[in-house]
Length: 452
Figure 1 (cartoon, one colour):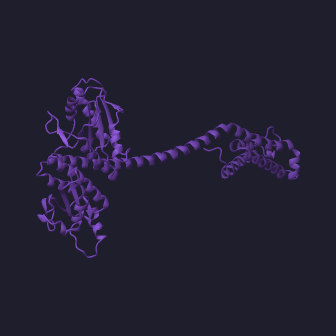
Figure 2: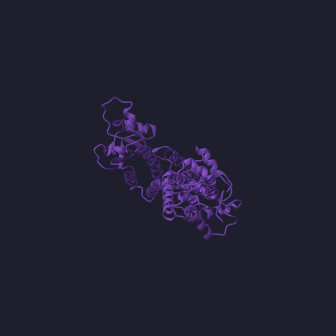
Figure 3: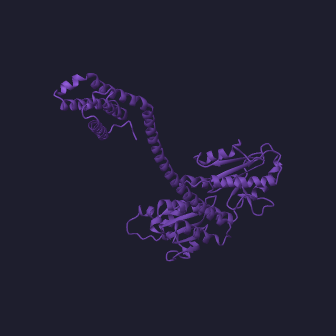
């Protein structure tokens, strides 16, 4: 019950009930003395005392005035005098009605002061709690939404990573078909083909196709398609809307887009020609994603064809490679472009034995290459101590952490090592160009330790 709030209806009701009870008792028990002016103290003093103690100073003072009027009215009605005569006859009694009502109200305030303050603080705290509760519900909703977005994003990255790594396990003959299936799963490619690009500039020869072959013949003359011709000239992806913006309306063009698959030297080994794609997916974002996939697929085709001079085979590790710095820089460029255009993260992890002799390099490489999966790229930097840099394409922080832990186990199992192994993970995003990224990779300060 909130004592600090005056409720007029309750005051009037309580006053009426107490007044009727007093008058009724007076009439029943002592009709000869209306108002009980002969008693000291008068029972009518209960009315201002109870109302003042219940409702405060104002209610007590008004109850005192009402009680004085009630008693004086009863005396005047029962005797020969007037209301004024009744008030003058007992002035101290009527003054006590006002005084005790006001005193009871003040005592009410004094005794209830701490409770009123506590209730005010409680109300303030309850308001704050309700506000915080609303904020918590809002933040919980935001967190759930972020979790859904992150899960969808991680799923997309994981799918791209898995699809890309699957290409490395294909033989050279099956690779073109697998690239098309990759595109079908990622961008819902309906009709398309991969063509090999002859060095002498002759007609394109189809390597693999998917969907209808109406506009995808076995041999394709680049002169018959402005999209294909421009893509070969620029060595970059070209879409039909780009061509139509510079040509007369009504010109027929069966090719929606063409994207080259180039090697590290920039030579176009193959060309993706797309003639069928769902309208809803034919967007600039989809075109950029196709270009990124073709960039990495061109790297895979280059490796399948030999890529002579861009890596060395590590003895005792099958066909696992350690790439040269120039080729590693090309791979970093592809990863940086994927991050800048699509916010798809990649990771670089640098392992080193600071101060150790160079004779440990071979053993160090053999051990670490055991932790590397197909699709990861290891490279040797320009540093005197034993080291190895590993690029993890389309692998974020969580995947890089798992890779570091796996590498740590390999290093522990094949130790001991002459010095503590340092491990650095370079995050994409802090450097805006390849020069800044290489400067970070070449840095020698260890920001993390493998604990070996």
